[in-house]
Image 1 (cartoon, rainbow, N blue to C red):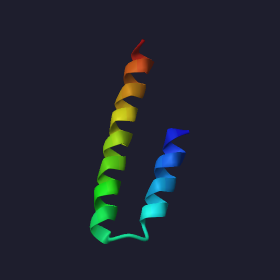
Image 2: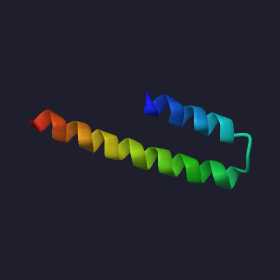
Image 3: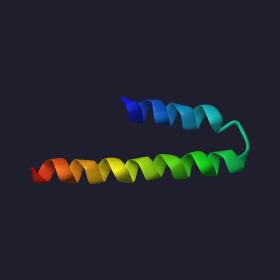
Image 4: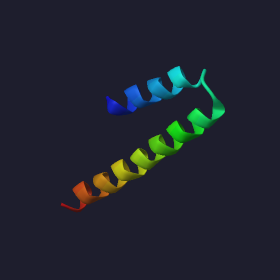
Length: 45
């Protein structure tokens, strides 16, 4: 659910400056990496 809202935010802000887009995308992918690490930890248990 949070992923969907993040993508929506990126689409909504994609109308803005390209610098803003890069910042949002870098934050989004940073969150994605954290989520995959969290999933791996869950799988270990």
